[in-house]
Length: 432
Ligand code: PGA
Ligand code: ZN
Image: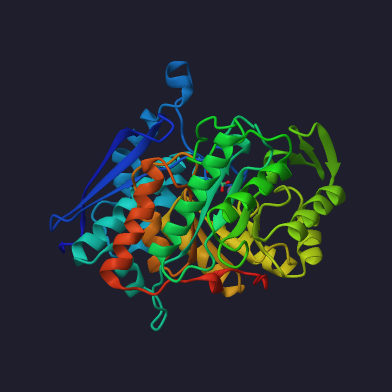
């Protein structure tokens, strides 16, 4: 038995940023090193992503995780006990085999990702290196770690704000920043300018699930327009210094090639919905757009990519669910040019990395992302940095489950002096 042999696997119920139960796993190695991982939870989930195991029933609205927690110390512990924590791939294969379903439905994706992350942290702790460095050291030589370009939500919407607007995320990207620390200053200015603007309009209603301002608009475009005004009011040149990024999260509003804009009380077919978004791309400095069409609308995604001609970053989230095979297929079909990477969509760290690698192999931009239900766990910041993903999406610039991640990146930048990925990390030729 070596010092990095897994000696104990423990699970517990903790609570996420929406006050819902979630799974924390704790792994202890023979040499005493410990690692912890906490499962996040999405609200606008892709139908093909790993699923959380919830107890059902009346208590805690059916959301309790006692069975998932029991699976950590039960079948998952059995599968990985005695293995070497440095063999993340072997451990994740054992986790996937113990579950045996494509979506981690039997043991729960919330249990598997917590354990997989805990193993990763324990291995890094044993090596004495911060996690990002542990990951960078394990990567291909010459591929230096970088601090990611952040995309930060200013207005929340969709499933994160009672569907008050149809689009889910109206985000700022500080494309003119020279460092991560400067990027956050720029976004902070925009965030607070947006709050002041809402207050003046008598529309300041608090914040949505990820900390973005609660949207009080008459149309979806009005929210984009307000974001543009906030960038200007903060003193930045739109597009040059701070650009706009949208997550349409179209799977929430579309099916079978038809899209329902509840706020505007109208339904659009695929072509009209694409035309609407192309109009936004013309009128506003939008450099990135996520899930512009629904997960069942491959035809629409291909048409959107063709219409935008590679000018803008087109991200697959629900469309690709952090799945390497789906990323490769999308690349062959020309359905996107960027992939969102959410560890709990895959269910293990190794499958997450495989999706990221598939994206890089296809020439896609890669964006590591949090979920709308988060915790103080900052693992994704280390993944984005150590794996050199180039971009990081965490939600807004308020609420400590978000700020914990931004602040962790500041520490990494200060301690390690790593370069900032900058605007070159984006896919697409838009350089306004
Ligand atoms: P979710 O939303 O975590 O609720 O799925 C995040 C996203 O769609 O990017
Ligand atoms: Zn999304």
